[in-house]
Length: 333
Ligand code: AHG
Ligand code: MN
Ligand code: MN
Image (cartoon, rainbow, N blue to C red; front, side):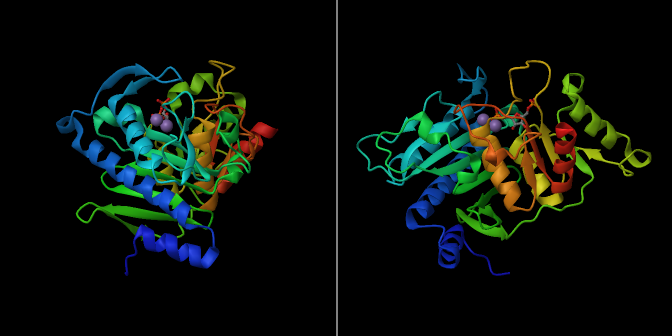
């Protein structure tokens, strides 16, 4: 098979669909380069003194790991100077990060979860980076948080990297989903999957079952039916997987089908689940829909939700379309 690079793919997609102007191409290439740097740091592990806690907390009150902080810095520094961005926002920063005055301001805004799956960092299990790209609103002079509050359907690009046995980058710009594998010797991203489609039929689900006693009735009903197996209403046995890194769970689902759930539950009625809408759920929803799957908050398409806050949380049901529609139907009833 003839291998093509990330750059060649972006240029060819621009020729075909006119969706990747040079500044967006630069943005994607710079993010991909930053992911390469993060992958390198992750790969060093204890040898690079990057494991363990940073002894600080982020805005969500979560303890930051050293690699959360390092990855955030890598993405900020890589993306500041190119002239393609107006501002950035991150899981690890309470407020938005406007581009410093010494650099030209561009027309895009970048959001990221610099390191997803923090609890897996110190135990050598796959982790990743998630990112979402929006256009700055027309006429914006000084970027503020409200300029970021656009629904996911407005994303112009989204992607994630997985730092696992291989480092891969999965990307969509609205014309399907492609996967690139990092060639570590060459230092380049090489396309290894084109137009990924999530298998419609699935026998796998992913949910943190330790929260079962807190689930709301529609989630309980759906999971009970899966667990009932061959003799239950679904008439087949299901298998369960939970990596605790959304990137890795979503990557499996893209390749093998399945459903990923992080519902809201009865523990903290005001907390809408765990995952964050703008830099976790929206980019993953864009990718999953582009791969023929679906993504809802149990009632509504995730990408139609009008964000109210930068760090807002959202219940997430995503993956094979039929399964997501079923559990969403249970919520609507
Ligand atoms: P992050 O490390 O960016 O805070 O995200 C972790 C998320 C997600 O990746 C994963 O699916 C989920 O949290 C795991 O949650 P539990 O620890 O409740 O299983
Ligand atoms: Mn995350
Ligand atoms: Mn994170």
